[in-house]
Length: 159
Image (cartoon, rainbow, N blue to C red; front, side):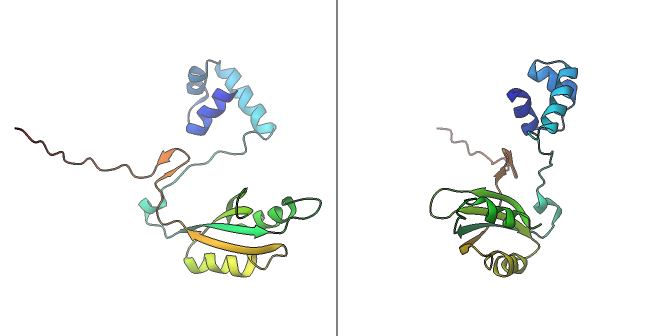
């Protein structure tokens, strides 16, 4: 099962036959296992990773550090649930260290991100502070390199 999951994480566009050959399974076993993993919630979805800079689409991605006061019974879960319900939130993680939650959002402009933080996130009950960091350039995501370096001319020195 772990091999199949690793193969799907690397490239979910492969056919069942291709996955079976690599995982040492039959095609029918792969199909059945994928159906089971989708049904039990292990596989949450399939997604293409797109380099939006190549299609000249304006987009801003921000990582927001959020400090919160945990709830007595639910800990961080209740406030996290309120935050991740927003459509702008792409990813969210509970962290160790100097802040509690990392929220990753995307917007069309810096202003749109700032409005989200100032008008929706920061005023939430239980949020005690935020710090926003804008992603300036993506080099690698989900094991995929966004832009491979151009081949450089080599200088040969003969003596």
